[in-house]
Amino acid sequence: MKGKVFPVLFWGFIILLLLNFHLRGAIPHDEGQMLNAASKLLAGQIPYKDFQFFYTPFSIFLLSLTFKVFGESILIEKLLAFAISLGSSYLIWEITYQTSKKIFWGILSVLLFIFWGSAVINFVWPVMLCIFLGLLNLKFVLAYQQKSKTATILLIGFTAALVLLTKQNFGIAILVVNFLTLILNSKFHSKEVVKHYLFGFILPILLFFSYLLVNNSLAIFFKEMYYIMFVKIAGEGMLATPFVYTDVFLNQIVRTGFYLLPLLVGITALFVCKEKKTLYPIILLPTAYYLLGIRPTTDFVHLAPFIAMLSLPLSVLFLKKKKLSIVFLIALLILGVHSVLFRGLYKWEAPILMHNNYAGSFKTNVFIDDKHKIVFDTVIPIIRNSSSEYIFIYHYSPIFYFLSDKKNPTRYDNLPPEIFTENVQIEVIKDITNASVDTIVIDKKFGDKTLFAKFINENFTPVLQLSELSIWKKK
Image 1: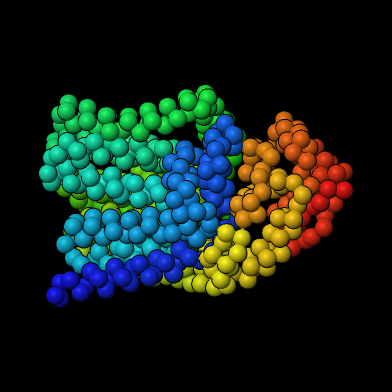
Image 2 (image 1 turned 90 degrees about the vertical axis):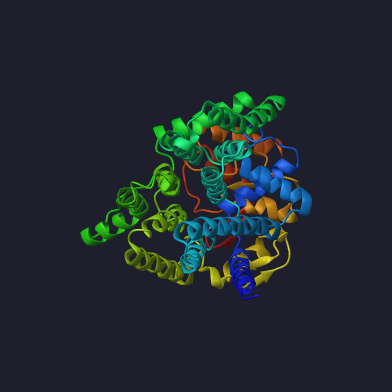
């Protein structure tokens, strides 16, 4: 009986903790993008062909399927994010407990993941889904090392493909980790293993390509991926931030050292435990994710998920350096708790515990902060009363499309300056005109001297201003 009480109490607490975090907040930009993209899929639109999406699409396919079964709302999206977090927490527990053989280490590892992962990114976002799928892939790798089964190898390849179909850079990372595992571990040294891995990997890739081919969007997908990844991100530096920020020298050292932490911990664990090759995948997964994911945008939101995974290499390091590993893990956990209490949700919003106003309308059904309660209650009724089925939002708050049940007349939910070229402006102006849009929402200070600015100022007039958010009506 005693052995059954602990799991019930512990996982009951974890479920309540995760629900407490996941049922708060409604982020207009990134979360709004996922909500609106999934809603478009459900309405029959094809990603890349009908609307631009920067990532591979498994996350929005999954969210769209969830909407199909349970209905469209932020609550349903948050519950899917909760399920992903709960799955990741369980896998973190399984892997770290089996590695360390210590219950307290498994507990600390789960809490570290929650306070640095789930409480920072509490909505359906490709990174968090990639972490879950990567952990699942790692679990299958470790299981195959214990008991060699063909089905397990198929699942290793299958989950690797799903990571690639969720986010491109993480897909490359998981392929590198699996490749190194095949080379370094004699358990995987056979043609049959490679054959079954490739079969498991290729199957979902072929299904996705078939979907694109049937919908006449395969060429568009490759063109879009090349344009976003190589022309805009790699070539023009879109989304790029400095790795070493300008600051007082001491602050630079501390901040840069902290941002290098996942790499430093991974290298240390590999060096200290170099003879334990069967544990290499546990170290390699978070390290490869970090190396392929920390650039081009290096900030708190992009770092936090990698800190959340640090219990994996630390659990290997724990086998040789127990006291150091425990102190380090507890210190990170304390920092995570402090961050949740005092740092803004997803960096830019109010701290997560300040999102305590229940919003029961406009497909919301979660708790939001005072600012968003006022904005939603004021702005959404105005948008809904628009005479057109279309509105346009400039430049990145697609949550208003979702909550107002209005359509975007263009294929762009996100229009950073690097994307909003003169040709795109001409395209957007044409789409707005053809759709008879009479309401435009602007979520930034609007004074740029562009073709689009000229079009807005000549044809629309502002009727409402809330902070930087404004609503413009057709003259």
